[in-house]
Length: 279
Image (cartoon, rainbow, N blue to C red; front, side, top):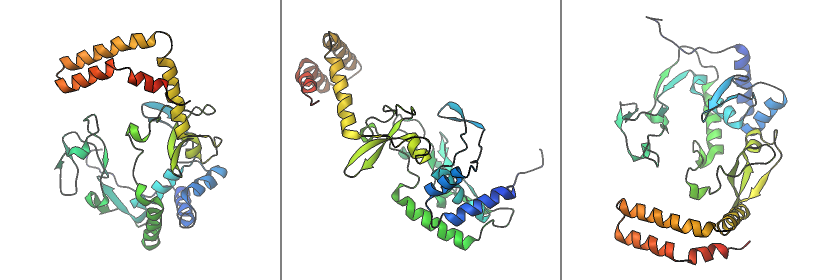
């Protein structure tokens, strides 16, 4: 309403009791185990039963706890009566800093040259005291944050790599049991694809399903080879590649690149390479 402003105040006592309980467990118990304990007890997670939209898809919140939810609650600055502004920047002209707007740099753009949402370091945020006393003791809370930082290691705040070279089958491999996508995870000196639902629920909603990465990639390449060499597809594909090369040449591709592309299209070595791949 006009002439009024909004301040943060502590929530219901049952929520504060649950938060204090999580903070007591986290110094000695990983967040994944805390989430499992709360799920086994049937404690609903925040926004349980509500509908929200992720990546454009509207769905009902499951009500299950996940490790990321536990850690995000534990790290929230309102627990020590601190309000923090400017954690994220998403403008298309300038970006937020504690000293005022700054001009955008290359790191603020995605590979397709569109602005991306970036997370600002804590020192670039604006912090101010809240209108209530701290919910938890600041000294033990700081020690807990140090423990969480050590557990997170170098991966704190880092999303999955968007580079297809680092995840060649990302978004293309699905668990046939639960239909969730399978994500690349390290496995000794190699890698594998593990069910996303299994990771999110810590095995509570899906079996331990995974597939080794190199065999999955070879299987995919064999499928492509079988498709390309079937029937007259090879004869149909070659004129299409030539037309694409001509289109690239018309759009300003230099002579050296055009010659290289023509040579690759005219040379059948690439087809022999595909046909000679190991099964």
